[in-house]
Image (cartoon, rainbow, N blue to C red; front, side, top):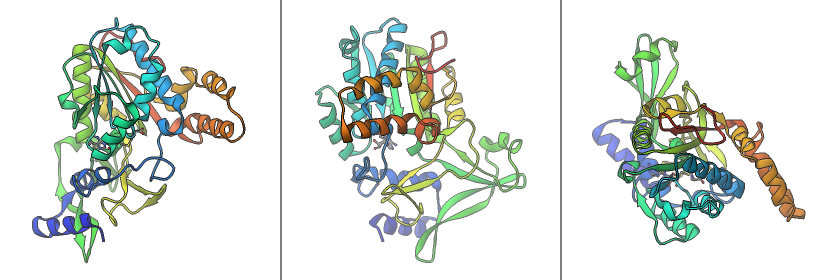
Amino acid sequence: MTALKDILIAQIKSDGPITLADYMATCLSHPEHGYYATRDPLGATGDFTTAPEISQMFGELVGLSLAQSWLGQGAPSPFTLAEAGPGRGTLMADILRATKMVPGFHEALRLHLIETSPPLRAKQQATIGRDDINWHTSVQTLPIQPLFLIANEFFDALPIRQFKRDGEVWRERLVGVVGTNLAPIWSDPVAPEALMHRLSDTRDGDIVELHETAKSCAAHIGNLINTCGGTALIFDYGDWHSLGDTLQAVSNHQSVDPFTIPGETDLTTHVDFEALAQAATPAKYSRLTPQGIFLERLGITQRAEKLAQNLMGDALNTHVKAYQRLTSPKEMGTLFKVIALYPDGASPSPGVEA
Ligand code: SAH
């Protein structure tokens, strides 16, 4: 029994079942008992690991791609260098190190991080080690100036709603109380406007997901980029157009039931890149590109060979494995994808295509 389970059961008994979005938001971000609010979940000893934690090469290449976009757009100054969901701050630290040699980039950048978790904010401060970091709880408060933003495994943590098709209507997945436990249940039939267009590409019993928080976040980023200039590189697992139940809970690198120990497991869903891209209009979006291809185009193989020259034994083995893990189609290379948002009239960042 977790504290959050008690809180949710009491709330549901008093006010009725809650949407999956409310359940996810509470589990991940409850200020006292939420998953991210209470821990640093990353790394080999945590629940999951991410590309920047696997190798410095990821952040270095992402940094160079961002800097190239900044140069291509006339090196605007000042500009916002932002990261949404920076975890331990490793990716941003690697971006800052890799861009030191880009003339004018560091003088022009203003650093903004979107992060809700107090322990992770502290970790980001320690890793990045600058005294000019501006934190936000949402993208909505970013300054109105050119925005160069990166997000890795951020959008997958944003709350979603799920619906199952039942004839010509839908039933929403809610979280209710069954016996002494939390359990998913289906609502009475509903017909949300946002799902009307999915009647043409789904069949009875299919599950579809609505990404309202992710879409409003992408809309704000797209608007800022299209108005002020900049770009966003968004990495995550997911695909173009979502279908099916993609909710998963992970604890200690293992899949677990999402409803048993709320607040103690990481909850994620696949990102629907089509929904993000469309929400970001009038900004343009690149082709959805597998992470491995993006990194290869930016020269990860040459960078890996260069770094390997100074390594031996276990360190060399770990480095080679990290390179494979980031790029191989059998590992993160195709499961993870990247999309770039950029202003109408500009070119997309190196590594992706229009
Ligand atoms: N980008 C990092 C960490 C990914 S984990 C990496 O690649 O290693 C997800 C990150 O998003 C964490 O920093 C988490 O605290 C943050 N996060 C999750 N939900 C959030 C929300 N609604 N608003 C802001 N940050 C959020």
